[in-house]
Amino acid sequence: MSLTVNELFPEPVDRQPEQFCIPANLPRLGSLSVVLPAFNEQYNLRYTVEAARRILPAVASQWEIIVVNDGSHDATGRICDTLVNQIPQVRAVHHCGNRGYGAALKSGIMSARNEWIFFSDSDRQFDFADISRLLEFAPDYDIIAGYRKRRSDPFYRALNAAGWNLLVRLSLGVAVRDIDCAFKLFRRSVFEHVQIRSVGAMVNTEILAQAFKFGMRVKEVGVMHYPRQHGQPSGARLGVIFKAFYELFRMWWKLRSLAHGQEGLYPRTTEPAPHPLHQKTEPG
Image (cartoon, rainbow, N blue to C red; front, side, top):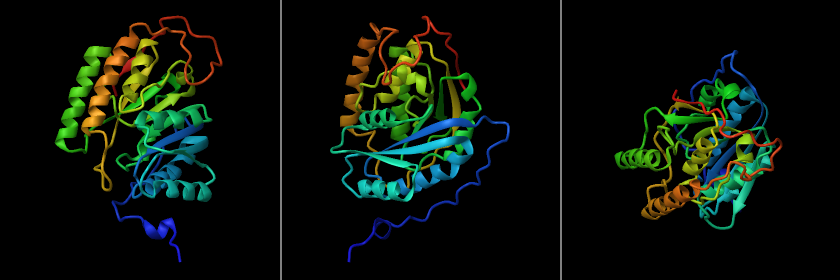
């Protein structure tokens, strides 16, 4: 007799979730798409989706969760399909092979249907209740970018991240404190101007570099970050790091000739705003 995904991969015991309560004065979004890239996250994915599902009805009138299985070798793909069958608001995108974090994020964003787009990782290192911290600034900003107030990663990963943030700030002029934090909220209109060509870890840098170039309004907000309990991160592998440096050089070169009127991922619903836009970038 074949076992179900639930029987093969039962939920591990972990910390008690914090009680979620959204302040009454915070704005509630009309519609929100949540994008969750996933690569070999069989022990984390179900918990991540369930955590998001508990929060989303309180923050958006209409919502969906898009899980992008980036060619996982474990049961992640089967778990995606199980979640789609169990939860009407969940949709899955499957890559035949491992195409990279940027490609997975792009697939999810291209599949999004709603007016706001949020993305996070599927590794259970973020608390979805922190979306409420981002909502406060939704009326006045195009992008609300989380930054990890205290990064719960090994020292070498934190050191790599600090060096990368400094390099991006110096080379591209993207002045944010935690560029690769996977906890960001976007107006859909951002991607009427912004393209995603990076297939790897450079994707956050690429998005924000274009946003700064176009003068979009960016707000940084501190969020909690927790240790990874299951699975292995891929961002610190040498191959990923070398690819990121190569893509950084390509991005620096392309930004020199980036046209304000470039086509984004989505067709434009309005005419391009005059250049420059009124840029408003503030830390949390």
